[in-house]
Image (cartoon, rainbow, N blue to C red; front, side, top):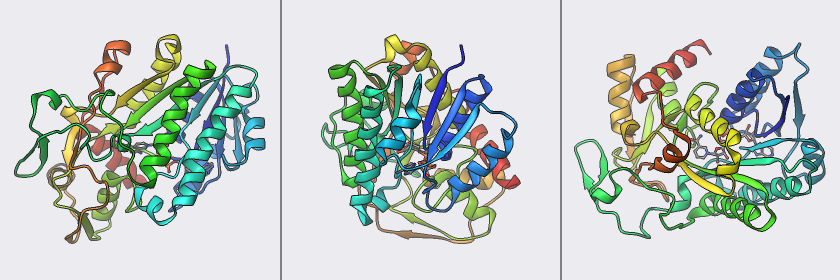
Amino acid sequence: MTRKVLVTGGAGFVGSNLTEFFMGKGDNVVIYDNLSRPGGGAKVNIKYLLEKYKSNPSLSFVEADIGDFGKLSEAMKDADIVLHVAAQTAMTTSLEDPVGDFETNARGTFNVLEAARRADNNPIVVYTSTNKVYGELTKKAIELEEKEKRWDFAADEFKKGVDEDYPLDYEGPYGCSKGIGDAYCLDYARTFGLRTVVFRMSGIYGTSQHPTEDQAWVAWFIRQAMENKPITIYGDGKQVRDILFIPDLVDMFDRVITGIDKAKGKVYNIGGGRENAISVLELLDLMESELGIKPSQVTFDSWRRADQKVYISNTGRANREFGWEPKVTKEDGIRKLYEWMKKG
Ligand SMILES: NC(=O)c1ccc[n+]([C@@H]2O[C@H](COP(=O)([O-])OP(=O)(O)OC[C@H]3O[C@@H](n4cnc5c(N)ncnc54)[C@H](O)[C@@H]3O)[C@@H](O)[C@H]2O)c1
């Protein structure tokens, strides 16, 4: 059966990869995006997608804002699946413009849920939340250990990472606006029976990602090094994230949609896990040893607000319930991203 899949933010990094995946499955895909991604990445992606599928009527594009409830409801008509990935994605931007951040992430997500609740087909809604909903990981003490090039969790309890039961602590406008969306998604399942699923994601990277200094740090460092430009490290460079290559994330979307009866109303922490955790300093080393590139200069500045020293996702729930685990190692993924960036 051909399904109708609406991808909000479908011209963005995650959204364009979802679009290609579901087009490949033979579904009808509607991209709903206002192309506002800073740096112009969404415009590059939509041009590429519309060219690639120009003779395929299964892809359509609605250029609109998720703040426009009428257009959103119209686009959602008859949708079987809604992949809600549109967002303002940078903490820094949310500090400069908390109102705009709220409108897109909080109000926009509410609009998506409300349109879905009123839609005819009782669509599945998958929402991409963030590790920032756990704040700076201070609600339940986690002892940290400082190593030569990275921070790490010292306590055995957290060796596998942070799981979904860790107390929520929305911090900064971005943490709050994404957290509100996260809370509403889970509650729309409980209160209205909407089939929602929430992913709390760590650093996702890969092809079709157009970095800025404020978002997509792995790709940003590679870009700067490729162009022999300088970088600034905010903090000591030992901060750690578990990075995940995009096809592995797309695979989890596919699994929860297929297994929606099990996934509905639930939240899953999704990231690369301990094996794919990497610090900023370690990324610079890896870029030099594996790719032979380095930035022209590295300077240090003060920590950014709400920047966790270590975040590693405990992906045990996704593994237990769906047999999901990251397949692409950080070394392979980074090499693939670099190869793609060289072409563009
Ligand atoms: N990439 C990551 O590492 C990461 C980590 C955690 C969570 N997330 C979440 O995943 C989602 C996708 O992130 P991404 O990296 O693909 O970001 P992205 O910026 O590449 O994609 C977001 C897309 O949403 C569109 N958009 C923004 N505001 C809109 C609005 N008001 N109406 C319609 N479209 C709008 C943008 O133009 C862009 O194409 C976001 O919800 C983000 O918060 C991403």
